[in-house]
Length: 98
Image (cartoon, rainbow, N blue to C red; front, side, top):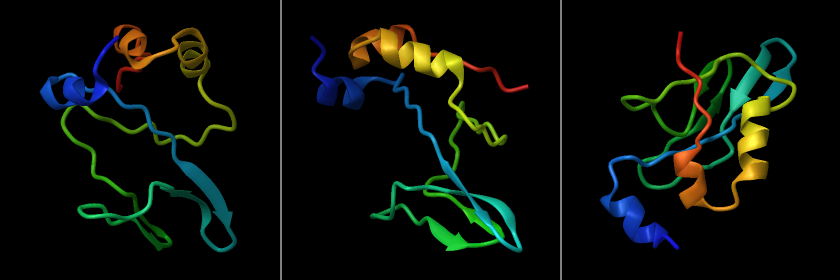
């Protein structure tokens, strides 16, 4: 069993998967929102048509800009197959930025 708190503090390879929500706004069209909310260092704003998500992308992070009606099959498979973080970090679904 991995001590997740210590692993995350010591590891340079922390993996995260985050899904955004999209809402349709009359006059603006589809608009992505981040439901994580604000806290110290996080400032998501609802200011259509400008998108202001909770966190800026960091090195080696990327955004799939397309709006999906359903989650990617690779994501569903990984979440249903692996039951803990230790399993997921060795089998994390990856989608290379084109």
